[in-house]
Length: 292
Image 1 (spheres, rainbow, N blue to C red):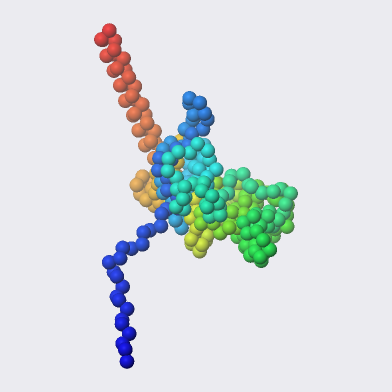
Image 2 (tube, rainbow, N blue to C red; image 1 turned 90 degrees about the horizontal axis):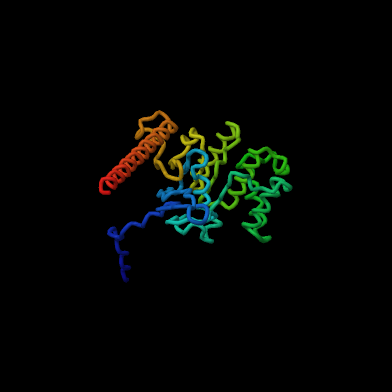
């Protein structure tokens, strides 16, 4: 009787698997608008990472570049330079289309269709063919329930309130079970109860589906609901931190207070540089006068 050879012991010396890259990786990211000799810099050589499976809040005042940054990430922004990788591929790569859900500030719905018809249409684009009919129906029903619009499923989108229309757009973004959800100020105009419910939904999506969520807002109290923060001002990243770490680092009671302290520090640094440049220019002018 032959003895079967024993399997070799596992090789503990094998290197561990490389960690997955961040959901978004940016280095030297710059966006300019306009052509000719003096294009305007909207985003100025920023660097950041968005970790996978977490909710990252992109916060800052209106006009600081949040929407431009989000369009860059989903691949719809022109005149982008630098490195910007999304889910391991260059932003805008065709292979990312089904992996990213994007909700713009303006609701992207057809007013002459009902809520369900809107979702049926977009679901058919994502999952065409008769064989996927049952899957589409279940996906649409779940997405409508996720955003609490089941009772309004038969209503025309044009007859909905602004907040309800925004929720239809969010439901559309959820249809494809995206790995990355990019939400541009999704809670604007919503009442406090609905805002709370949407944030609970965001946390559920991140926890149960493993999705990464990047959500922008100019309302600082929403920062407390995020795992990580990117704070923007005038096209630059002021800080990337967790809410707790930001409060600790700035010795602040709230994220808003910490943000304002960072703004004051940035202003003081900019003013110091401006003053130093002015002194240098004055010194150069004086030296030029002496040598004449």
